[in-house]
Image (cartoon, rainbow, N blue to C red; front, side, top):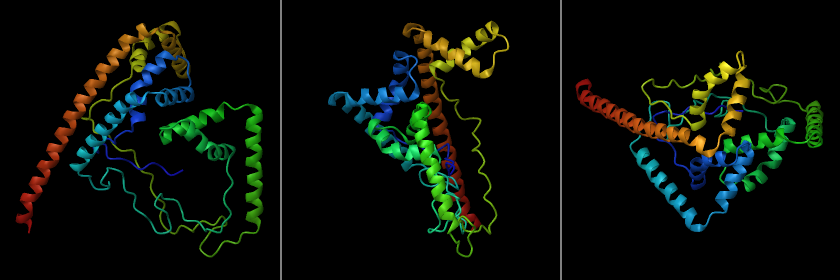
Amino acid sequence: MPKKQPRDPGAPKRNLSPFLLYQHSMRETFKAQNPGMTFGQLAKYTSAMYAAMEPGEKEVWNKRAEADKVRYLSELSIYMPPPGFDAKGDGVMAVIPGRKKNGKQERDARAPKRNMSAYLLYQNAMRDQFKAENPGMSFGQLSKYTSHMYKNMTQEERAAWNARAEADRQRFEAEMTSYVPPPGHDAYGKVLDHYPKLKRSRKTTKDPASPKRARGSFVLFTFEHRPKVIAECPGIKFIDMGSELGRRWRALTPEQKKPYENLAEQDKERFRQETAQYKAKAHLVQNMGQNIVMKLEPVIS
């Protein structure tokens, strides 16, 4: 699977659809109202609540989305991407002959189609149905939901997909016995790579001066209660620690969770203000640099 291209951390944050704005706004509320819900169940519940809204209520979220779009386009109009990034701040990958844009080797179009795992067959078969049942889900959310549904299948259902995967493997192996690769291709039909392998992209280094991200109510809860759990359960494993903190959080009443939610809202506002100041400062520095370059150009020429 091709790796996601890096994005300029200083690029404008993309605008969100009405549903995603609603989802982000209501996530913590719905979690509190429905303790113990899995990710997939919560996504379905949010989708159902959004679909059941009155037109007047939905129009409020449409207006918020339109305002967010205006904000994004406004920020994008003054955004100047650094080298290696496109006009929207996405990383640009250099294309090497014999490879596609995503860095994969090109393949003979006549080569047998590779067999798929049971999960990929399930994912391809259920994609459209899950999209229809969960309108507004992002690609990442839909992938997590599909994975959750697959993991919770019965043994009989899983066996059926394993049988399909085995049949697909036998189909691939049978087709490979009669496949003759053309010159310049390997036994599987890939173009022979005569170029140096692409280096793995390094993780984008974060500016140490950038604002520290806001923390959610549950995270703030864990900061306070982790020492208590360690004291009560010395030697507890990391994974068990997460489970125990999650259990204690779900056991809280909405009133008990309220102080943490208030702290999270305050931290979110702090992050908004610091981000605005950080962007303004970066924009000012960028403009100063451009002015210096413009003044030096006549001298250099």
